[in-house]
Image (tube, rainbow, N blue to C red):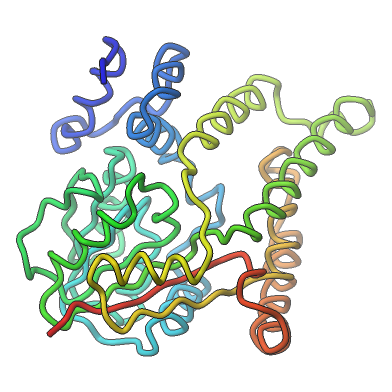
Length: 334
């Protein structure tokens, strides 16, 4: 595929994280236009764009709240909590899954990879601040830059839906795993879950931005127009980088075709997702300072209670396909 001058600049930036500590997080109009024709360029632009604010946007932390969330998601998929000696996080983002699993003593030593230099930089900075033993590389999930039989565990969170060729990535995961090693990928959208989550998010954004514009008394609840415009540009790229949704049965079949054994997919979040997506969209559409600690606790406690309902009530009576998140685990043959 031909590259414009701007897209070549971004491709060069992919490999420069060690020498370029602050990649420009804002894509130009020219870069965005080029990204519509190149999904991997879009991945870099969008995730570099999001890197500096990603933890805040998704309420990611590295404390007991997210340590518990990460270890619970891992246990639900993997059936155990280790410990594993050396793990790789594929598509690490800011390091949410790996770093919280390390703090939860599931993993002793970690490595992170992401196509986005900005995300790798933030993940390594987060690891350093937490005092965790982590190295990182800018890398394509379809060509993992580690030797065969390197890792005891490969993990990822909300990454598979960004990878063009999921089966090829699975084969690479199995290549870098040691014999008998395990992979756990969590937090990817199901076909049905993605449909209702997107519709709820779009409706909430439209209502919030239009009501705060139309009602003068709510003017203080409206973010500056330039911030809303930038969010809209990012959302346009998000539609390009979100490549897949999954049927749990088909995802299991993909892992088996790649050569995995002991494959199992599990799903979670239905009522929690129906609540969480409008809440998260509302939070991103209004000034952060308008929402205080009370709101944060209300949102978190409600989501927590609904998650309990999903796990202990709805999961027993509804098919797994209707839940929002799908996680998958499997092993490399011994």
